[in-house]
Amino acid sequence: GNSVTQMEGPVTLSEEAFLTINCTYTATGYPSLFWYVQYPGEGLQLLLKATKADDKGSNKGFEATYRKETTSFHLEKGSVQVSDSAVYFCALRRGGADGLTFGKGTHLIIQP
Amino acid sequence: EPEVTQTPSHQVTQMGQEVILRCVPISNHLYFYWYRQILGQKVEFLVSFYNNEISEKSEIFDDQFSVERPDGSNFTLKIRSTKLEDSAMYFCASRDTGGTYEQYFGPGTRLTVT
Image (cartoon, rainbow over all chains, first blue to last red; front, side):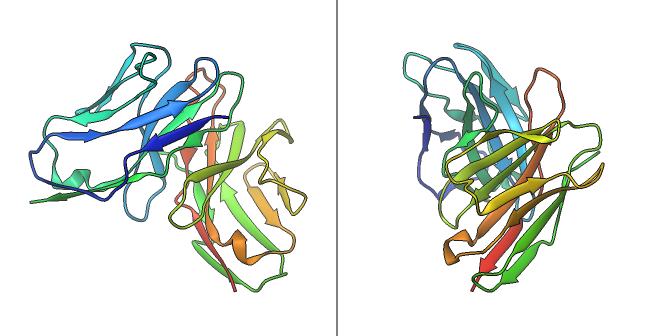
């Protein structure tokens, strides 16, 4: 079946550090891939997405590239801010289906 | 900016009781979803709903669960006879008919079954 595996958190970084949150997936066919972010007390918000191999999604300084050969969709940001502290979820949508399959989420803490 | 809303934010119920979780999707959206997240575990898909019927459901969504769109604005999840293991955060989501498949999530309802 489909599954998403994310690195365990919490991940604690200093402001302006480089961020990588690893995400790998298992799926049949060619899924679409997503990163969602959840700030405290709020719902999940779509951060970025990629729908086919080698696509790069980007938003708010975050980037992720759909790597079919390594079945990965790692989230990166060059210089994190305190306001980036949140829980980040990697997810996939299998072609022909509608429900999303999520990873467990990675809690990111940025210290000033 | 339009948003998905959910009520209540926290629901406490006794085992065996029925609960109804309520959601108001974004007004022009036509696809609706429920997900749940048991504490410390993954966000799990429960069900999707389109054109007044279930379009997809997971193995979790058994006969104890039902969904309904009782009017033009609400979308509800009913659990008939709650179990301790139903304790979780329940998220509602909606999307429009465009090709982006972007789902907009509500803030969630925390259900505690005692």
